[in-house]
Amino acid sequence: MIGFYAVGKPGLKWLEKDQHMEITTNVKQAKDALIKNKLIAIPTETVYGLAGNAFSETAIKKIFALKKRPEYNPLIVHIKSFAYLNEIAKDIPPDALKLAEYFWPGPLTLVLKKRDCIPDSVTAGRESVAVRVPNHLLTLDLLAQLDFPLVAPSANPFGCISPTSAQHVQNYFNKEIEVIMDGGLCVRGIESTIIGFEHNQPILYRHGALSIEEIEKVIGPLALQTNSDSRPNAPGMLSRHYAPRTDLHVTNNVNQTVKIFDGRKIGLLVFKDRLVDNGIIHQEILSTNGDITEAASNLFSAMHRLDRLNLDVIIAEKFPDNDLGKTINDRLERASKRK
Ligand code: AMP
Ligand code: MG
Image 1 (cartoon, rainbow, N blue to C red):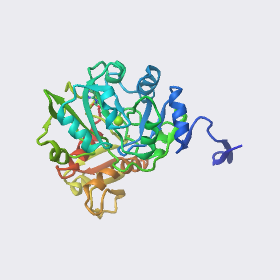
Image 2: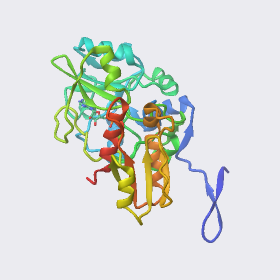
Image 3: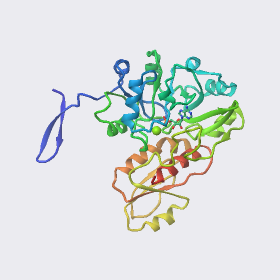
Image 4: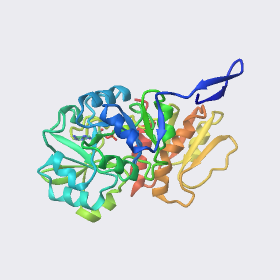
């Protein structure tokens, strides 16, 4: 029998290995589960996804239920290649084609007019569908072997810190997912950038792993949507999201904020410089070289580590407001909201 010893009271206890869940790199096993309308976790370059057959109402229902995700929050469809885009979207604006060709596989999601094959439950009743080709070899291999695309929101309970490793997924969903595909740490570590189109003009719906600057190099100026829970075109972008259980404060002045919380158990989340203060229990430095891309890729794993330390407060340093600093600030702001 496969198993392991766990220390507990009154002593060592033999635990049988969980029969329901496998962390694996076996694509066939993942494929078999999906064909039976089961959910699996997939690695992508952004974060780990909780994936199911995008054409299966059964699988879609399971995703919303397991994540406790509100039904008004539509899902992103993950497809195998740029060539497949035409199967699920129509009337595609020229700039969308340009972006897809340039950035896919990659962390860019496009919101386009949907074809009838996409169920209303995927799009929360909208006539548009969000779609991307993820950039991870294991998941691309899996998608190539399937005759359906995957819906794959992040593999975490709604509102919690996104998972960037197979272990994070297992910590959230130990028994509920049959297969977790292990693709290592997510290279980008932060969600995709979402672009929609109004009258064929591109509009940024969500800051993400591709900076506005990178996108504008390909298609020119990009209009922005202001952040608001009520904005009609990017439903589900709630002000509180990506949040640890520990209170998180974002500040331009870490030294000063540390003084305000004097006497409390403090953890720090900073860009590049360590703070000298003996009262601080743990510091996470996101990039000692001051590399913003590296900082973005480390953000969620650092938040996971800090959240396990039973701190009173996490103090997070606000980033320079350009390039991926905008995306990091967006996630920190949402993580800091209490509701
Ligand atoms: P995620 O939770 O990271 O998988 O991203 C899903 C997000 O994509 C949603 O919260 C929406 O903001 C956006 N989205 C998905 N589908 C659509 C759609 N049809 N129209 C507009 N935004 C969408
Ligand atoms: Mg998510």
